[in-house]
Image 1 (cartoon, rainbow, N blue to C red):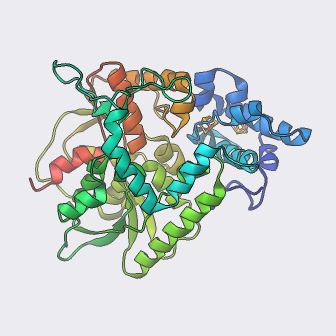
Image 2 (image 1 turned 90 degrees about the vertical axis):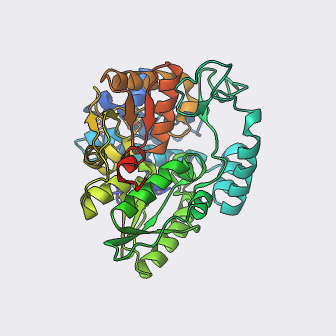
Image 3 (image 1 turned 120 degrees about the vertical axis):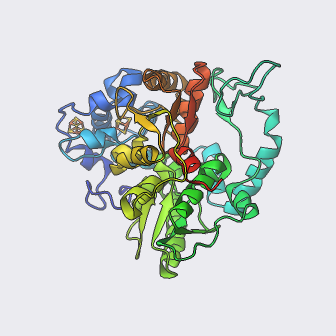
Length: 431
Ligand code: SF4
Ligand code: SF4
């Protein structure tokens, strides 16, 4: 099977995971940066070990077994190894190809159901509307008892921890937003019309922002408009494809990419100059779509800082903010400065936690499938952030926000975890 990620510079089109893995020279420079190696402590779950495993497996001609699937499922797809590899390899993409090969004989029913739902937007919205209505059956309130509200960043404790199948008993989760971003935006007349705009962009919210963190989406729209950027919201956008690709379903990922690309091309033809998103994973995946005609994809802070330039805020905010780089922004796109500059322009003081570039441990469903390694990585990262002394931490990815918020709440740190656009929007909003 050819590799599923379009536009990947490290592989000639059609190269198999095994032939790409052959090019590893076993130098081991990728090991210290690998969260999977750190959490599991075994070579077979490191980038070098995974490449050797994929290569040996292909050479042996053995049928795909559960032990093999288990090893390649332990990669968090954080892309840190690709950034560290002197041979220009991207082990995460070889792992993705390996997952696609091992899923070729069929995905489990639950995944097939979920991915079919992701590719059927009207049905997805209907199911999540129902979920939002009845989620109280599964998620307890974040204010148990009558005491003062703990700082849980809006997370809630599951009523029934389903360990060992899904949820660790310590885990806390955000609920689904009662109203989706599109509906809130429509009710609050956003986006508004901008007289003499400096640019015209389409906003791609991504599933987490649309259904869980609509406040982050409103902050992106408000920030763009405060910079005199006209924003177009399209209901035709679908999931970017990251989760389906990660689970070895490149066919559905390609279908979603083709639909989104069609929407983007249409928007570009109608005068939209760029697509902006506040989700690091969506940005990484959208930027990898083959040949976007006539426009570009940006992370929200990247667009404000690099493409149009930051304006002075209406008011100055203050306070130290520990900044966590999302792996898909830092290692996947080389985007790291812009969120810090946005925070600084709003009056905040961005501070650096130790172990720069470390993963929060979330990685999509990794935290559900591997709860103990997740807790190890997540506890370490939240301790890094807390060691700065800042009472607020930020990360430009809704998934990182969710997982860091879980860590802060579980450890009772009272640390607020926010998306940088939410913090910065406070300084730029009219009221
Ligand atoms: S993508 Fe991340 S978790 Fe996966 S092998 Fe590379 S460094 Fe390790
Ligand atoms: S850094 Fe690259 S070449 Fe070196 S062991 Fe890791 S994947 Fe192989």
